[in-house]
Length: 365
Ligand SMILES: [Zn+2]
Image 1: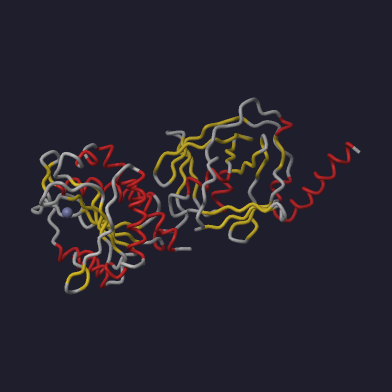
Image 2 (image 1 turned 90 degrees about the horizontal axis):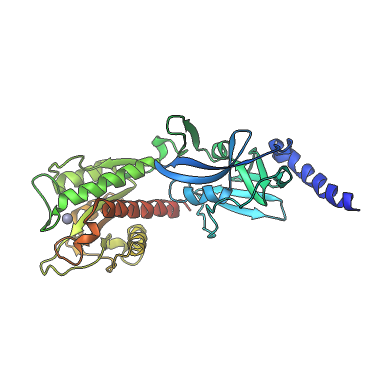
């Protein structure tokens, strides 16, 4: 009886495995070594807790899903015990369960704790062959095969001892984002007694934002690539001719009273009661709040020809969602520190980046 109890489920699993995951039916390797693998994803360094089996990295699905959720290779994962299957949906939104990227289970890994994983794996409804094992009770998937199934490229940078994951999306069909660094050249924008020209702050954040977005596979066009003068007319013409999928204009605030505080996002008047630019403004506010910024109401300001602000108006005329982000007031002592260091400006760029990625994920739902 004892033997039958052990063998029957195994036979059952093997039967299930044959049609979908031929790889998994092969004999389990005898040993797995705990590994902490350096990985570059979307151009950003991440750490994955993996197991090495036969010199290949095996990763937990939800760890990769969690990291990918910040870029345009987001995928959702659904387990079905009834089907003995895991369903991945590319472009789906991954809901974090709070157990992502936790370190390995303590203790040694003995051969008896490594078993072929009985679950079949599907990507967008199609069965895929990805070797997987249950190690210490968790499912681990062959990183290279999993990424290939999700359409991502995997390379090994021997010099840096890093796995480099790149987005699947070809540059030609990736969305195009216009990153607009406000002011520049002969137009310094606001001037801060502590930080100098607003145009330089805008540029610093915009360059980092553009880099992050390119790393995630988006096409990025910048209105300026140095401290150069680009008129509002030129920026509007660029929007009209390029017709990007999104315009993000990076500014920093000032006010006559010099008492302004907090982050302010300006969105398009047509979206005042709901729409894509309002949606992005809300995502930006959520990210800014998570960095501890006070968040002001979204500004919708009407001029006599539609949007009051030229960038928003030109984009609206071209049918392109656009926002202007004013992360902090730089003209007063209580707010300028929010952008006072290189570290703070990089946090700002990353916040905008996350909001933009989330926004695109919502559009593709
Ligand atoms: Zn400005």
